[in-house]
Length: 135
Image (cartoon, rainbow, N blue to C red; front, top):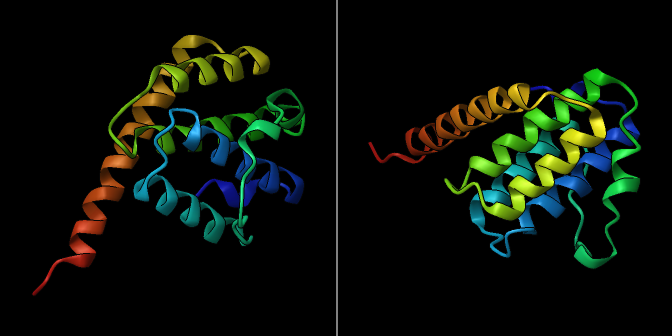
C-alpha cells in the first residue's frame, strides 16, 4: 500500500531491513515470510534468496532513506511485520528504538505507528482466513 511510493534504492534497502527485523527475534516463521513476499509483490521486486544476518549494517541501511516521508513509510510497514506474529519481542523494540532515534521521530508517533501496524496485521490475518475458508 505504501511501499510502492519508495524510490527503487529505498525498496531494495527496505527488503533487507525487513529480513533483518524478521530474524532479530530468532523466530522467522511463515507469517513473517508471507508478509515479506507481500512487500515484494507490492514493490515489484524479487525476494532475496538468502539473507546474511551478520553482514547486515543497520546504520548503512538507514542512510538510504533520505526523506521524512520515506522514513515514515518504512517505519509504518515494519510495524506490520513486527505484529504479524502477535509478539513484539524485546529485540524488535530495541531495533525500532534505534530506527526512531536515527530518524528523529517522537516516541509518541512510534506508539501510534505500532497501533496502526497491529491493526493492519490483524486485518491481514483475518483476510487470509476468509480467502482460505472452505465453502
